[in-house]
Image (tube, rainbow, N blue to C red; front, side):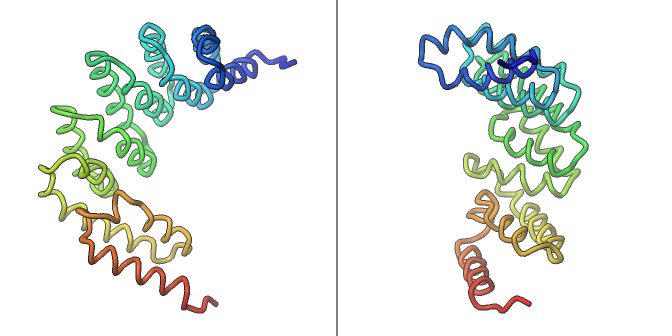
Length: 219
């Protein structure tokens, strides 16, 4: 038997997605209540993120209030980003604004860029414009955020040169990193694909990667 109430809460939240339909519907409210009782902010945010797609309206609204109490900007932003797509229009707009505000407060640039990349495709109108304006302040954002949007927006073509410039600069920072790090970055589909790079450039990069991996002798 699990003695710790927090561990019990974590176990219940983990079980809810795997229950049959009727049992899951009954378990969602106690599952959410259990998630809200989790003391560790990171674990609480992860639990809310896991529950979000399954929660009906009233429970979802209650769940939306919980991330605002999370002090860690990274965890707060992640939970809000996960909850926002499940909401009706008006509360979704509020949640997206809160998500963007939380994302821009994240101190670590890499984490901030990751959250903005996931959040950007959900933004529209003034919020999207605000997010794009924010990308001008940071090279990592300038690379990741517009790249996440190019697949669904044709009006961002003027930003392509700055995205390519940021991409080239970031590649230069990887020159002393492990080969694995460079290859993982080059496997980022949203960056190494048209329209960010032309098909000819992508093919050339792929050919050079294959040559390096197969034919070079590593000391």
